[in-house]
Amino acid sequence: MKTPIDTEQIQALDRAHFLHPFTDFQDLAARGARVITRAENIYVWDSEGHKILDAMSGLWCVNVGYGREELASAAYRQMMTLPYYNSFFQTTNVPAVQLAARLAALAPEVGGRSFKHVFYSSSGSESNDSNVRMVRRYWDLLGQPERKVIIGRINGYHGSTMAGASLGGMSGMHAQGDLPIPNITHIEQPYFYELGRPGETPDEFGLRAAGWLEEKILALGADKVAAFIAEPVQGAGGVIIAPDSYWPEIQRIVDKYGILLISDEVICAFGRVGHWFAYEKFGYRPDLVTFAKGVTSGYIPLGGVMVGDRVARVLIEQGGEFNHGYTYSGHPVACAVALANLDLMEKENLPGRVKDDIGPYLAKRFAELGEHPLVGLAETCGFMAALVLTKNKATHEAFMPELGVGMLCRSHCFRLGLIMRAVGDRMIIAPPLVMTHAQIDEMIALIRSCLDATLADLQAAGQLD
Image: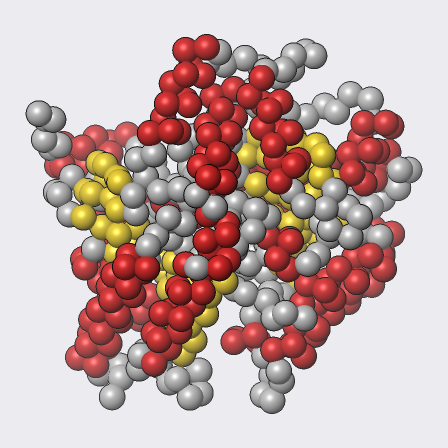
């Protein structure tokens, strides 16, 4: 019999020793951390025994669900064979090589561009740091060292290291640490609900939003711009889904000016949008693809960059020694778990399920939430979704930020047994890809209950009629 968890003792140790990411340390110390003790399938349990439906897949990553013995067994076998060795000094290991070949086979060729090479890291943040190094090395080798500027998007997220946070467009992150670092700049995000003009169609807006990239390139000088980085769907920014016209126009612009295109698929790859890689769904041709999270379903840290032939050829044939890498690049245990994870995803056809079955079913059920008095927009892309909490559905009038309506709704979610993330007043989900129709129904019912509780609170406070 397992020894019961002493919640207060763990919380006291947590206050005394653990500085959490993206946390107000003083506030957390006053509240006490929620202690998660176990997980199975799509559910987690806290130390008080409460069962919670995890509609965020941990942090966008537990694609195959919790408790998969196949992944634990793969880690154990590799730990007992070769728990670690580095990839420096002309050395490799079997799982790292096998995974690189497997990823190269899974990454589809689009428009004549293919991905046959992988550079490993342990996270999406590290991977995007690697992108900065590779992009600038690429242009140096081509005799154009002045091409240093990388353009990102406002409200985009590319990690929290110095380079990753700079590439992203989160103002709160830029306010700390003297960010962004030099030669990184941003354009506005393709958020039609907030930025579309009266009478403008989504496709018209998509073309206008893509045009902001061309305007920025011309303002900087095309000979100074190295790359454009963007998420296929903005995740941490609130599941912002660009109109259909956006990506084809982005591709036209980067082709016109010869700049590199980086697709940050840390969230969107490995089945999340119904494809192994999201660039295939949206039909654009990146030069570099950032991955992490779903490659191991979060069971162990692993990240990397799929390096397209255009970049790899220059780095290999002209580059000499590339002075960049990590202690855990190609970690054998992480790569072994990734291989087992991809085996599971292929065996259970999870990308196909998202594309043809549970994705469309989620879209149907989630759209019903748009009828709720608090919801101004409910939209999905594959197996991720967002709804906007609004004061006035007809005019899109927002609540005053100081009310913290999203966080109010989030508190009801935890109370009622649901993990749903708040990004301002956008409530977002990205559930495990193993969900059944019945579990989607369960999740939708929980979301509706949370919306009802939030609505009641706002009415009682006089914020709504």
